[in-house]
Image (cartoon, rainbow, N blue to C red):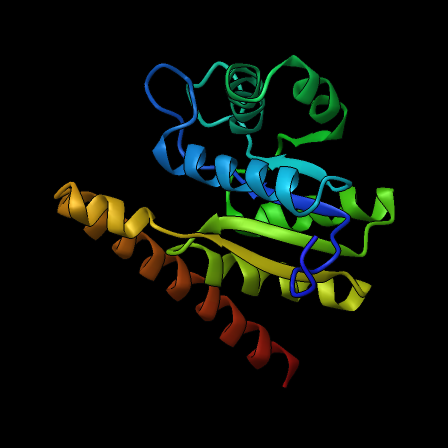
Length: 192
């Protein structure tokens, strides 16, 4: 482990949309690969929390789909011995359908394990809002959250001329921020 990398009890990997085949989409795969590399290279003692509920119409949760995809990927690229080491470290949180619910639900899991230092894995568009929400929930419980963004996703979409997808991601995130900040303002007004 490098000196500038924090010691972590767990890596929290936030889910994302499943593709029509019920497998993790591109964003979820990038997040998951980033977390797997961090686990292997920098935090081999950490647990990995895969987060994401069952979207309407889906046969299984985002977390379950990520776990199955991780097993296939690790077996193919790193071998069965690495999967045997990783499999017991996976924890699935399958109730959350949005980032705010993820922060609440993951908090109770972390408290059950008595984890104090977690890495939060998401893409560059999402990491700032996710970190804000997780930190807001975790701070009173003295759980430290270290954002570990996936780099290169925006560049990938730009290079492949997926401008519509980039626009949709940016608009979705802007709308989500407006919702979070609106709720924050309402909360402040109620306290007065």
